[in-house]
Length: 151
Image 1 (cartoon, one colour):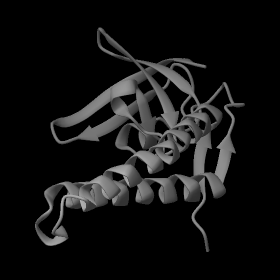
Image 2: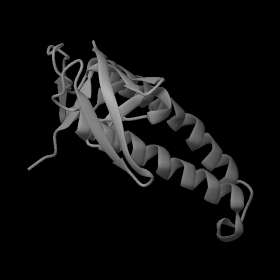
Image 3: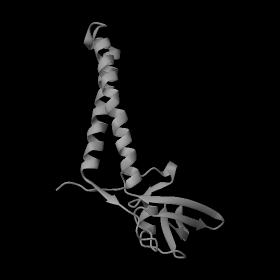
Image 4: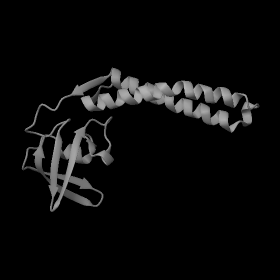
């Protein structure tokens, strides 16, 4: 059975844009490989090895993105009353306020504030309502967040 990937509409658009960028690099990489072949002996040709490695990375990422898009289940944030995939949440921990967008594992990027529903914070938040608390286990101990706003 194929794995289904839960992604938001924005996440799908980002993946489609990345796929187009990667596909457009194919010609450039092929040119690098052809140029590197002209340098001579392929067994000791660092440029050729680097170009082939780059090609492998690009092709594997293209295949991965195509698989994700073929097996994507689009998530719409229709439930504004409880936290679910697609929800944007404002959390408070003491005086500190943080904002997260709960997404599927494919889109997760903590630096951008996108947390996976499978991450410790995501698991603790799922199904919570505004005003409720969620306790997250971390290596430094438990952290308690209060859900301030769901959008």
